[in-house]
Image 1 (tube, rainbow, N blue to C red):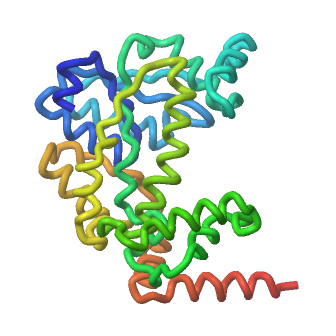
Image 2 (cartoon, helix red, strand yellow):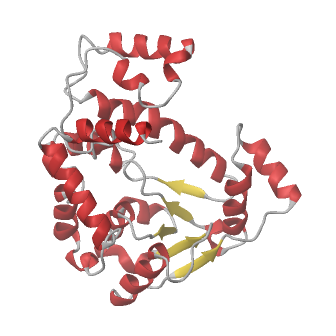
Amino acid sequence: MAAGAMRFDMSLPLTGGLDSRLLLAATRDIADTLSYHTLRYRDLTPESDDLRIPAKLLKQLNLPHDIVDCTAPAPTWFQETFADNALPSHVEEGATIAYGVARSHLRDKIAVIGCCPEVARCFYYRFGTHEPITSIAPFLAIERGWGDIPFIRDHLTRWFNALQSSNHGVDLFDLFYWEHRVGGFMAHSQLEQSIAYESFMPFNHRRMLSLLLSAPTKSRVAPHYRLYKALLKRMWPETLAQPINPVSTRQALGDRLRYMLGRMGLYEATRKLSAQIKHRRP
């Protein structure tokens, strides 16, 4: 973040989530050289966590906060230009957001993007453990219908076979998320939004991601994310003054129950049994 601030006029988009909070904490020694903003899009309101929490936190830290309105529909000419910029394009939502950014002061800044640290958060095995992977079957099961598409089966087979000699100690689910999921959607997302702004992604760094992945899984998984909370405390503990992605009491209890079942290896069996019971109901 310090290196970026020396080179660019940066603005950090802040939400109620973990990743943007990590980037905020990393600006402790350079906080007065950046601007901070939150995009308002979809159905977000001033009471939404992604708007309310950044506003309260930045006020506590005596830092400025701009709300960038991205709710106005983009005109036809902008939608057409947006669609030509990247194919395929998510014109309905993506063009609306890009249009809002292009009309704001952000068009002259470098936006700091907080994507990629979720590579190390056990996305496909949220409790930190899973059955040994001996074939491509677990990957085909991620999306319904993948097993019926020869292109996907063939690609996954080549990918899986190439990793049999060495996967460099990285869990295959983590590697799949890194290479196939975030490597696809985030690259395309940045290509789409490049029509409105330039971006800087500090977590897009092989050594940093490798270090995160080397930590014990129990420190990287939901709901506690102990490793990431420790990083926040180390870099700028005051950034924990507001909650991160707060949940209701009911949701918190449900998450805790799922976490405990997962640690005991019972979550998948319970979920499948529940689905079978639901399917049998008249």
